[in-house]
Image 1: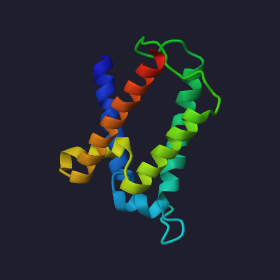
Image 2: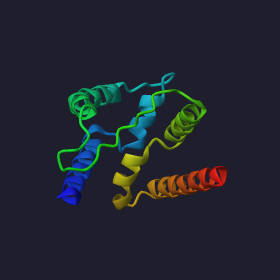
Image 3: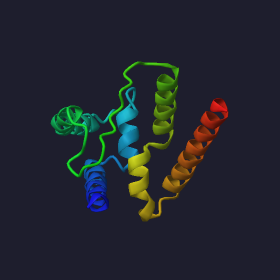
Amino acid sequence: MRKLSAFIAGLLFGIGLLLAGMANPAKVLGFLDLAGTWDPSLVLVMLGAIAAAWWPFHWAMGRSRSLLGAPMQIPAKRSVDRRLIGGSLLFGVGWGIAGICPGPALVLLPGGHWQAWVFVLAMLLGMLLFQHLVARRQS
C-alpha cells in the first residue's frame, strides 16, 4: 500500500507540474527574469502549493506516524546555517541556468529532452559528491 500511495502521489505531483507549467524551462526562466519580460504566473502556482500543503503539514506536525503507519520524518532543525545558505544558492543558480529543478527534470525525462538528461545526470553526480564529502568529513 505504501508503494502504491507513493506512486499515486508522485503521479499527481508530476501532472501538477505539467499543468502548472513548471516543467517548461522557458516559463520558469520567464518567471526568473525580473528585469526583462517577467512572467508572474508561477507565483500563483507557488501560493496555491503553499495553501494546499498548509493543513496537511500542520496536521502531520502533531503526529508520530503517517496514515499508513510509517514514522513521520519532519526535520527538527530550524536554524539557518552555512550549509542551508550554500545549498539554497547552489539550487537557485542551477534553477536559473537550466530553468528546471529536480521534480520537473524527472517529469521531462520520458519526453526525450536532452537538457533534462544532462540536468539529472549533474544532479546525481552532485548528490554522490555530497555523500562522498560528508563521509570523508565524518571519518
